[in-house]
Structure formats: C-alpha cells, structure tokens
Image (cartoon, rainbow, N blue to C red; front, side, top):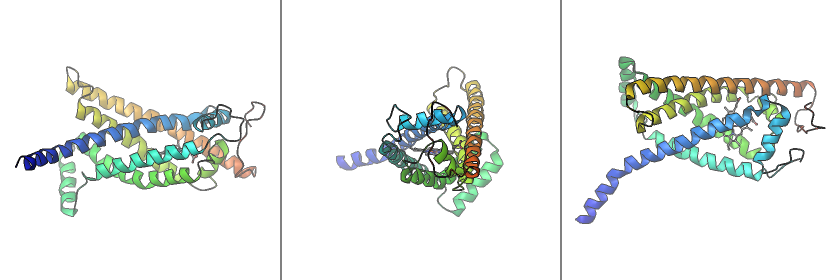
Length: 250
Ligand code: HEM
C-alpha cells in the first residue's frame, strides 16, 4: 500500500522535474547560441581574427598552425546535438496532440491577442524550423569539423549554397532564444523584484533589445561571409583554406 502511494507521489513530481530539465537545457542552449554568434562574428574584425578564434576552439594557441585538434569541435557538436534533441523532446510534450487541440489553441491565440500567448506560438514555429535546420547545420559541422575558417566557412555560404539555410536559421534562433529567456525569467520570477508588472514590461524591452542586437550582429556577419564567399569564387580559391601570411589579411 505504502509503495503504491510512494509510486504515485514520485509520478506526480515527474512533470515538474521534466519542466525544470526543459528550462535548464533551454538556458544552456540560449547562452551557447549567444557565445556562438559572438565567435562567428569575429569575421567582422578580420579574417585573421576568425582564424585565431577557430584555432583556439581547436585547442591551438598558434593560428599560423595548419590545424589544432578538430576532434574537439566534433565533441562539442555531439554535446550540443544531445542537448538540442533533449530540449526538443521535452518541448514536444506541450504541443497540441491533435487537430482539435490545435484549432482550440489557435482560436485562443486570436481571441486573447495576449503577447505571452503569441510568444508561445512563435516559440513553437521557430522551434520546429530550428529542429530541422539546426540538426542539418550540426551534422554539416560534425562532418566538416576540420574545414572551418574564414575561407572554408564562406564557401559553405556561397559555393555550397547554404546561405538561405543560415538566414532562416538566424532569424529562428534569435527570436526563439530571446523569447525563451524572457519566458524563463517570468516563469521562475528571476527579475520580479517589488513590482513584477513594471519589471515585466522592462524585461520585454530588454528582450527586444537583445533580439535586435544579435540579429544585427548575425546579419552583418552573414554579409561578411557571403562577400568573402563571392570573392573566393571570383578569385578561383574555392576549397582553399585561409592562412595568416606575415600578419596581413589578404
Ligand atoms: C558545437 C556546435 C556548433 C558549431 C561548431 C557551429 C559552428 C558554426 C560555424 C563555424 C559557422 C560559420 C559558418 C560555417 O562554417 O558553416 C556557424 C554559423 C551559424 N550557426 Fe552554428 N555551430 C554550432 C551550433 C549551432 C546551433 C545549435 C545553431 C542553431 C540551432 C547554429 C546556428 C548558426 C547560424 C544561424 C549561423 C549563421 C550565423 C550568421 O550568418 O551570422 N549553430 N556555426
């Protein structure tokens, strides 16, 4: 009898535990994405800077070396992929399970026109997009872990035609990440303070500020990679890695 009761208590704690796990995996992924974009945007400083960052992530302090230990990148990709799949699986628990639930949900969104409900909807759509495009990007990175750098990355945008994927993924990631962090802060009351209503309004402004900042940074980096990719094609150096020569960008 006692064990049956214990079993039920344990089961009833399960949704809360899964919720916490969803929040923690989301937090880790959102922070990872910001750091990832800052690293990718090193191309805006110079090609040398992007190569230096790449070599550092490969565990090499010397960017003039041909390669560090690209296996480290492969390991990071596997880690992020596992977190990504865990987060998506946990989120899918909350999707409408059938057409009838979906219709009810849609009419609620329309009727209430409530920002937080609309946010849920944006999260579901961008999450869906990211699940496919994000997984594709991760698999490409897994297979090309030793082919990252100012030229080789730019070739993926232009020569391999991946620019539409990166563009859609960028918008999905930035919307999803900022809304996700906002929802986390509201859910766990991180910045409620003495006046939660007022602070929530402030939080919304911060959310938009971060979205605009990271989208701007992402689009500028996107433009830089596309420009280099086009130059690579014009100068016939597709597939050739960039090398730091006499400390000069070329
Ligand atoms: C350890 C995992 C990851 C690695 C090593 C990685 C690496 C890279 C690299 C090197 C680029 C430059 C383009 C290229 O070389 O093809 C890039 C761009 C990009 N990545 Fe990732 N990435 C990772 C995870 C993710 C995830 C999980 C997402 C989103 C779901 C993502 C979204 C993007 C986007 C949107 C861009 C384009 C950025 C822009 O145009 O400004 N990445 N990534």
